[in-house]
Image (cartoon, rainbow, N blue to C red; front, side):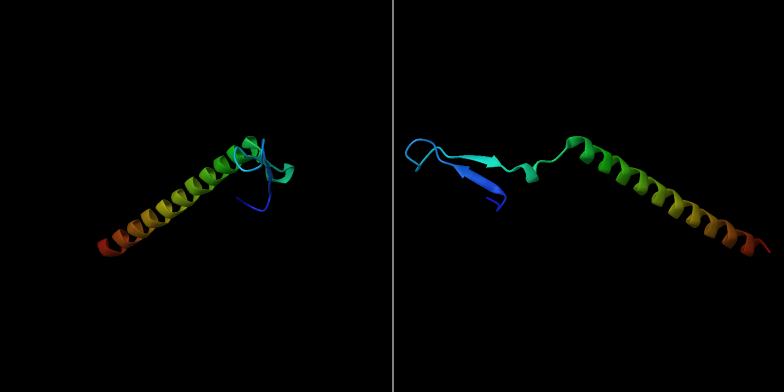
Amino acid sequence: MSADENIRFNGNGKEGYSRILSETSRVDLNNLIKRVREEEKKSKRNSLVISAAALSAVAVFGIILTL
C-alpha cells in the first residue's frame, strides 16, 4: 500500500477494508495511450535512422572496395 492511498475500514475495523485512491493518483488512459504512441514513433524513427546509416556505410565500403 502506498502513501497516496487512504484506508476505510468496514464494520469492526479488523477485516473487510477497502482502498480508496486519492485524486492525485488517478491516471488518464488517454494520456498513457498518447505516450505509448509517441514512444513507438520515436522508436521507429531511431530504427530507420540506424538502418539508413548502416546501409550507407555498407554502400560506401562497397564503393571503396570496387575502386
